[in-house]
Image (cartoon, rainbow, N blue to C red; front, side):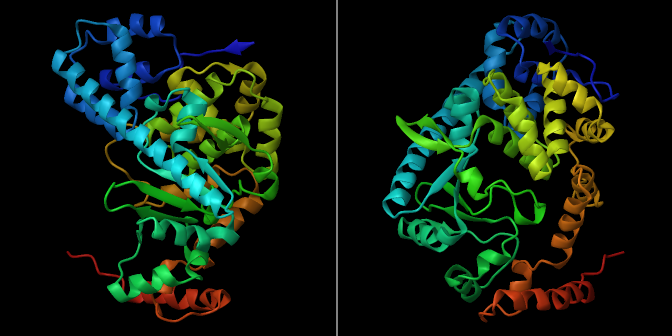
Length: 411
């Protein structure tokens, strides 16, 4: 039995612009959307704000598709023309990125490097069934840790430049960073971003689907052996199973504190377009990896905001975890808030901790943040090639230096 509910967890009054955006991106049929939009579009809408909101939340294609299905005369023609133009531009970019993904995967394969693309084109094709309905701007490619240096060399040989994030470096330090084979152990996000100077394509080379500090491993050898395929640009490329894909999206959404509506739309699309989803397998994977609460949070948000029907047995298990509703309320009340407070008041860390059901995962997460070295610690002696374990010894020195030389706030 499938259940729906229009009762939302947030008690805040919903702005008409938010109501329109949620209707356009909901899991309702086109006929249901058109009927509801006909009423909502009679409001005095701030169309500039609505467009900005759709762009910020990376749901312009779904927003455009929803408005187009409504066929309402209440939609200003300039807005429709702008949306049509941006949708076509986004579609062209998605097709170009998809072609580049296939090209790179073939190059990796020729070098004997196993790859697993995720998010981006593969998620658009597998979850939405249409590359143009999911907005993406980069390519995420996972390789095994042992192949990182080989894959990095291949991308550099293809003209991609390595982008260094989170730290500011001199040209000499940049060269040392790129040449270092140790630096991957200090990159907390478990990914190197690359940018091609001519095409502007961005490729993120991952050795972890989730950042290491998050303590939510989704790329064990068993996971590598349980892949499926999806058609991209006329070729079959490896992809996560729908069950693992759902878990990965819920993990990424939780890591980012669900600040983008697009992530919630991804959850809804995976469930909606995979009616044969093996719920027992999803729950078992989540239990083994310590991600049940993250899974339940993603599903609850998709049901609460996008009216995603869920099996009654899943709803009962979600209802049995009161922390899920607490987290969902935090998300719903901040999702369309223009002020991002998650990095400023420690609420991001608190959100991450509450989203884990196992105490050992909370402890590991906290210890990772506190004691595992980062690229900032590498900057203490960037020209040196220390064994990795020494950076753990240097980490306390780095923390002390940050506190001692912390810029004082101006009065």
